Length: 319
Length: 241
Image (cartoon, rainbow over all chains, first blue to last red; front, top):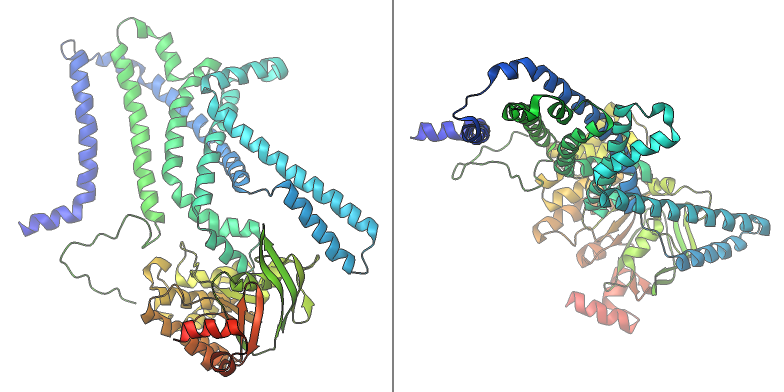
């Protein structure tokens, strides 16, 4: 009995994973039985065609991954921009006036200089304000419109303004997906960056880090750990959304389904293949991400406590 | 060493600092006491420019630091700061907390930085804990790592913002011991604290602040036992009991 318990405790992670797979496989088997139970699976059809679908999904993975990475750059920049606080205009003018007063005490500063200063300060303030508002608008537009419409819009845009590239479906698709996921990731990054305690920034600044380096070495490493789950979500969502690219003539599963004998009879086989391929990829991804999370977990922090069997006294860590 | 001249600070409509002037000599340990909301923390933050004064001047080693042409990053390397809530970098081990500034701000090589960090951790009595993450350390240990982190930048002076207020009573002693040792070694320090024992043992002078002004300044003996001002007297009587 004690042996069994020990075995369970040590191997639980693997048993857990196997159980999860079993549940997925079981439910699929049930659906299979429901749909083709009596007819039998058309294995010949699958062996004849599965290469096509694997190829299509690899195109998806390729498009999604590039779009996702570009989207991360967009998302981080816009998200960071949106965490910045702009001061109200009245306060800004006040600070300018205080600055001028302080400067007029320095005798070496001449009047013309302070005129320039005010001009450039206003310009800087205005630019910052405008860029921030553009960031806000970008996120709202991306979130507020369907991806399908965005893809159609992008393709029309290319047809009208960049005709020579209009037939590059994959290129247009990747650009659209990147911009789309950028909008969503902006919010993910903003959440991550704002969740890092402000004391961390203060501490980094207090030992002489510039704003940029504090972001690079202190804020971002913590924020990235926090946003691994939503980013994975976003990647999987984008991966599935990338099947929409058939609109642009990219050969994705849906276009194969439409082209093939799909309507004729072997519908289940086609869906079975697509389901299997997609699940294989997303489930693998989940496991990879889980191990990433474990790898980068900050010891002693977060809800995942160190597993300690009840009633067993752990030996003190060797220092 | 540090000179603050007529510093004013507003937060919106709130007038936090109403003309603060004082001077700290090299090797002095100044303790600032006062009721909460009197502007003590803001004053410390004005010295290393985490908060920029609205007007007035801050001098460090004779250089006015709150003016154009002086990089804030440079100023902050001159004065170390220790916070009430430690603010250790949660994703780094104790030793990495100390070396981060050395390698990334000062451009020291990793090996040299580790060597120096080990020395500093030993100095605050935490040589054995160098590979622990902040969440695995007690409050007192975290604060001592934070002191080591600040010392690593070779500051000319140290600012302590209520370093023991967030600690359980059992851990206060160890942090105060480190601070006392530091003061004895001749570090210039400005400490905001309510630890009256520490103040009377270590402080060369005590400033009593209230409502954004320095109300009274004097030796520990004088402030605690023979305060001149009525406000000082009522505050001291409350905390000494």
